[in-house]
Image 1 (spheres, helix red, strand yellow):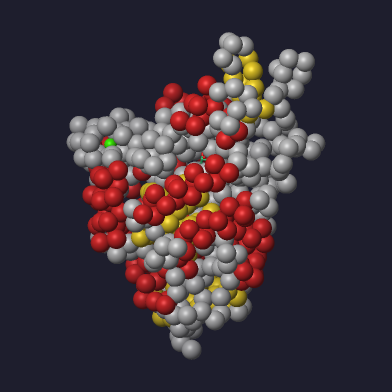
Image 2 (image 1 turned 135 degrees about the vertical axis):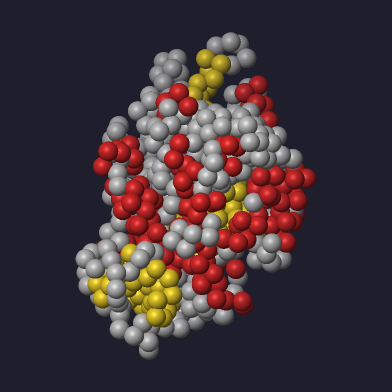
Length: 563
Ligand code: GLC
Ligand code: CA
């Protein structure tokens, strides 16, 4: 038996131990005013859709004023709303209406870096080296005779050096500032107390407006090893996100911040929470973020990074559950988000998502892509994920089995990865294309309220096939992926053995993952040749059609066992 054993009943334990949270990439979800960009009013209009889908919570990607160099992950003001997305009063209405629909709402907080247009960074540029204004970021003298070389050998996650030189008041090149991501995303200096105080105020600002919690961007990145030492013997080709030790990821000091934040969360009623985006491994390192006085959830990126192979998935599941049981935390399973190639493509092409991978490993060879098999696997993966102990995060479009959009013309690519990699990495736009709501292409397949908007006019162009994946086409079709997600979430809600709690592996063939949950519930995922249904079992849900009493390849089943 693995997972949490002695838990209070679901109704008595905090919601974040079991919740299925739906990630809304605001720019691409629903556009209320015809400008081709999603917005807050668009989300409000789709709350009934989310309610019907059956998710417990929504997470909204950054909606703050931003020059959108990294689509909102470059925040110019943490306590207001991006004019393209709406106004603060609209955000407050959305928070209230989400609650009225019986769902929770998380906002995205970006504490590792701000936008270069943030007031503090603008002040820092205008201020002298050594000033308190510069101390809120990482300004350093360069190396070399005239300071013409960057202060150390760190590189940006998006490509190129992690340092940018500024022009000082005298018109001469002067200090350099650190940006682990885009040039327009200067890193905060978390050795500075003002930064700590500022983010505590930001948390309270949104908690006071009723949000249920936060998704913490680059949660493993804020604290840098003191003195900013060089990466030792870096492989120039290896990416910044490589899993080896880095002087800017997963430093001990980051946990002090979360202890401070936990106190703030706990000072509010109704189980406010935070989920970490921490690309760290192994699972024992993730568990450190989930100690009882720190955060509540951390995305399980080892699971997301597993290829579609039963042994690898099983290993990851076991590691996670063991590591998290040590700290009494639930796992947060995830297969998709706005940073990785969609699971339909990944599972078919055997791709590895995320850290330390090359472009080809990430995006794969389109010519080999078999969408039928990819969709079958993504659907089976969803039933696996939703049957495992803990909570899960679902990314918009996943419930439609949207594939990666591979046909965005180069001159329409917007991800900073594209330009910063010297146009060798197409980046992440392919998983961010606006949602198709209708079969017909008007209003960019219903993405926009304005019927005149074409799929080309959406901020990222939609593929011509997008309508066939639309909500309209899938709604009410018993065989659609949308129907499968709705049924799975409905079953999950009523099945007290699902969500957090123990699981037990069932002995099975090597290419089958099978486990049971309390209440004689079982999940079977078949990766190999067709196998017989377990005797006397009743099928609750299936990711694809059965062949007689056989479970076909790449199919998952939810079953009630006879004993
Ligand atoms: C996180 C976000 C990603 C963003 C990066 C920099 O990884 O998920 O979209 O580019 O942080 O903020
Ligand atoms: Ca809009």
